[in-house]
Amino acid sequence: MSEDDEIDNDELSSPTCLREVILNDFPKYLRTQDQASPAMTTDAEKSYPLHLPAVRYPTPHTTQTRLHTVDIWLPHHPASSPAKDESLWVIYIHGGAWRDPAIDASSFQNTVNGLLHSETAPSGSQTALSPTAANIAGLASISYRLSPYPSHPTDPSSPSDPDRNVTHPAHLQDIRAALHYLQTRFRFGERYILVGHSCGATLGWQFLTSPMRLAAGETFDKPLGIVGVAGIYDLHALVEAHPDVPVYADIVRGAFTTLDPARLSYSSPTALVGANKVGEEWENGTAVVVVQSRDDGLVEATQATRFTEVLQGAGWGKDPKKQLVCIWEKGVSHDELWQRETGLSKAVKEGIRLVMDRNVSR
Image (cartoon, rainbow, N blue to C red):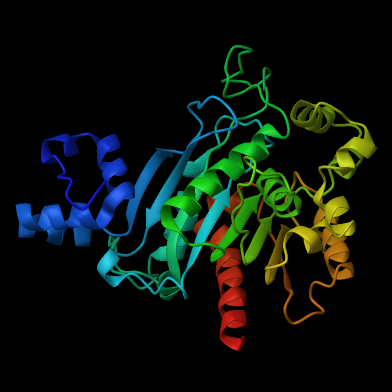
């Protein structure tokens, strides 16, 4: 949209059109509203934090489908946004065993509330921002295509559904495409923290340790920090820890097409970090947070303890430039970690603190 283009206010009745206008030229949209009605500008300012749900991201690697969307939250009006060289984006990758249709980008909403809204705000207020919000330029949560789940009790997958019949590395390709879209649109460079729950933590670490490109010559910045919550870091160990529960083998086979330990190691963060792929592919990283509940119930604690040992062996937690924090929760189940406002938000706040403190000390 050029400086001379006019925005047709009649078209703004469409939510999709409104999202596209906001994302493509938000300052121009605000100027148009200023000219149309001062009251509308005031209302727009009061609407923050602004939530833009189900924004489609381009998929150069495949045909775009229903799940190629990202939810975006903008905490601040552009006139009062924090300086770009100081604030961070927080980008979330949901879990769900690579296949659960009930978990998508919208599952980050409770965490967004916990991060942005002040605990001391009046009852029912959505406008009073928390101190943490001052360090956040934006938040995003990525939906991606899923692996087959024909045995789901209420929403079984169909072989004809392009959203629910992919295997590795399709999930990772979708994540990369969404991150490329966000970086291109909002130009935050490396100033973001990647957050993943369960298999979302797996995908986050696969992204950090993978040299895979979207297209020839196309690159983008990796984050300053990562927060892994109830993560799956060793795929073979996950299956081996539950020999009497066949669903674990079904999940891993469905997502990776194999149970062969050697082949699974190529996709397991524990093996990738152990092979120094994190050092080769994530040179700008400054902070790692590993979160695990002792009462998870689905992912055993040894996933986190073994991964932490491997991280320490790679220098994390020993070099002041490579900070490592482990958070152990009690009395919280696997999904409660993301369902509760305080679950993920506490871990994300720690990640933000580590990155911000490191930047101040540079």
